[in-house]
Image (cartoon, rainbow, N blue to C red; front, side, top):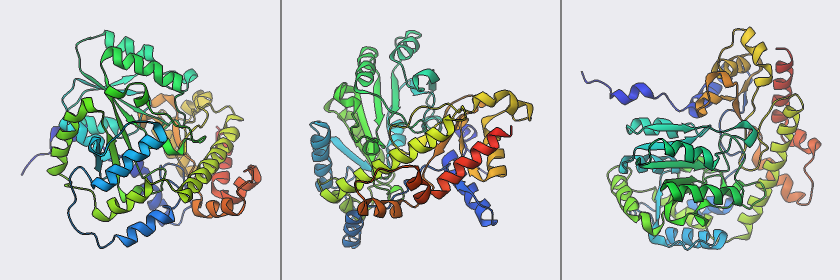
Amino acid sequence: MIDLDSTMGKVKPSATLAINELSAEIISQGKEVFRLGFGQSPFPVPTKIVEALKKNAHQKDYLPVQGLYELREEIGNYFKRNYQLQVNANSILVGPGSKELIYNFQVACSFDELLLPTPSWVSYEPQAFLNNHTVKWLPTLETNGWKLDPKALEEHCKKDTDKKRVLILNYPSNPLGNTYSDAELEDLAHMLRKEEILVIADEIYGEVHHEGNHQTIAKFYPEGTIISTGLSKWAGAGGWRFGIFVFPEELTYIQKAMAVVASETFTSVSAPIQYAAIEAYKEDESLKEYLNASRKILKAVGHYVYTELTKLGVTMPKPEGGFYLYPNFGKWKSQIISKGIDSSEEFCQILLNETGVALLPGTAFGHPKDCFSARLSYVDFDGEKFLVFMRKHPETKIDNDIIEQQCPRISLAVKKIASWILTL
């Protein structure tokens, strides 16, 4: 019999998918679960894009590995229009999700260290392990919103100036929910250029920046930045599996290598999905309305949960984009430990068992087990219903009463967390 590769001993099933499956299992037993552990958009795919998929369901041919030219051309126009970046069709590679593209990058490239700010998304490190890459976690401070400071980057690089390094920088952040200002991105870009570090800017949540003014680090460090994005978060199309990498001219050799990997693995993204995605990147009034309403809802719901939990003394960065918060329950650390709970995994498991609220432990994102932090995804509500409400009342200020009406499960979940915490 054959043996498993040694790298398999370092990885477990994705924590986000695991919590979703565990929640489904508990629900199948007739128990109630508040699904705040899985990061899936609560909103439906925009009608215009769904109709385009229906219209192109007959498309059956293999498409170019790099992606349908008309689609790549439209994506390039999108980046010119929204970010003033001179992106042409030949600098774009599409894949079955940005997750797959980040993995394929690690297959295609040789480097000494993958740098990850603490905390970072759950799959970056396991993907590196599967490709025998070394991961280095960069320290961050809660007082700075757990954001990467250029000085931390510089201090790490001083240890060995000859190593080739790649940084994955995700913003708006999963799991933190905050983002970087233009000034912060510019400072990071200066240090990245100085240290000759390639950065993958994971901007999958860029379009759901709550104020609609996401900026890309490629503006300040174009020659060393690969932009990663897709449809899953802003268009509610996680299950469609559509991702994008945008390369500068200086890194086209990596793009070509990744296209080779793609040709020997997934071949090309599903043809109907690609044809439908063309509509997602065209300038369109209905998509603007959809995004504006989505941002307004997420901003209000995020602020609601943030306010209710911080009243208790829970600490976390203020939400600025996406649909995550990263509460730290460290205020109750002594009480938690006194109950025999010695890790954030166990903390989240007991919280789920006793309240039905599912959170994802901070250890999944690189924090030590005794940090007692967790990711909270404020998505357990009917996004389609809320969008309909916003279309009928576009000028309405979303107050707590509206949130409790439109998001009753979010409201109840927060109350359950609060009640449980106060009994520790």
